[in-house]
Length: 482
Image 1 (cartoon, rainbow, N blue to C red):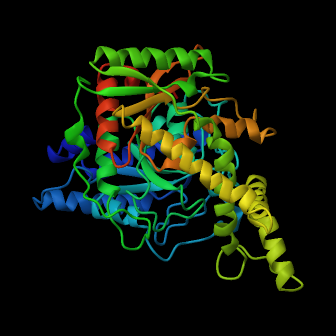
Image 2: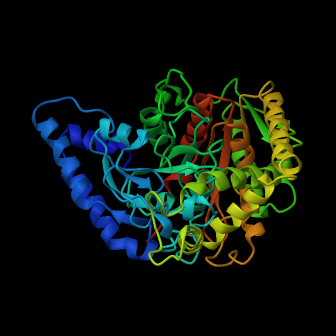
Image 3: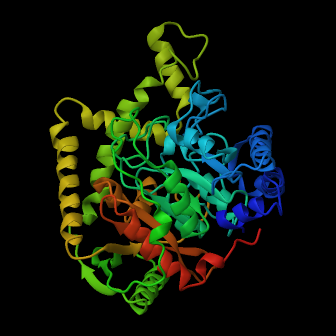
């Protein structure tokens, strides 16, 4: 699989044109996507037109940026003007946004080529991409296993070689967990570093957009392009965005790496534990000082998250009522009947479950007992991280307690599915950057992910640690044999 730098060099030296590169990825989608089901929509004509524009610039002698002509797949909860955006839900089945999200506009400004919209858990609610209303995505390493979720389509597309890079969103682990399951790199930035304008909201205080790639460098390049202040997003941070690639160094001398001891307890697959410990030893060989760190409130993350996120989802999804846009039943008896039937037919079971949990927790008499208490726990988790980062530069843990599980194996047990986000959720609760990269394979040949967590706006430290580990190992060179 070619990296961004390799594809860029091919364009600059005129070894291949942007149209040829784009067509090669479209051909790959044509060849394998009926097995993987990464895409809900392939925008072939649109992509070729964008690629031709890049080729015209090259022919005119213009300098092109690093991302010009590079194909990218976009998760289907990111609004793309005049291109269908469904959130993998029946309620938005035919929704065509009249505006461009800030991140997709930045891709356009960088002359990237959008090759399609990827499958996901409905409204990003799920950890396996099985709650999509349209299709189930498979893991390219084993088509009988899930790719993770909710950004499973974006992860599978990169893992299967259908796109060099893609965008996902991460509310409780929805970039890092599928990256771990699919054996690629997934980066969740600091909350507010990347604009959420045009990202269809799930839980507004947790959602963040980030890249998938096959290498740490590619994630650094794409994040640099999509990060930055946006006046259209009230939670956007007004900070300078550095060139993250300048922090990609191959040793960890002088760096302090904290190992979160609470992530190595009950429920952790022994093979995942062993691979993570081996990765930590490799970091030590690279010059890092390894320090055991306790984050005692870490374990309350899941219970607090599954109050806060459904409460915010309940409020955010109230807008899908059949009045302004999206699905609407035609033969309703009255307005209330139209509301009820539109939502009953438009939303899937997992979305309904979370709306009901959130509505209950926000109802009179329960707000203080649930939502307010969960927010206080969130503050305690944040304090644990703050104390940890006084002692270390980055923290490490397994990304997920297990490797990818079989399709259908957890659908009847949502709590078991929720527990797969045990390691990733606290990072969202504290608004921190986190990255997953491959660090091993289990005995059945499925990838294992290592999570590296940084302090607020310390993506530089995360990329440095991830790159040094990646370059000292061969795991990123493994590719799924489709």
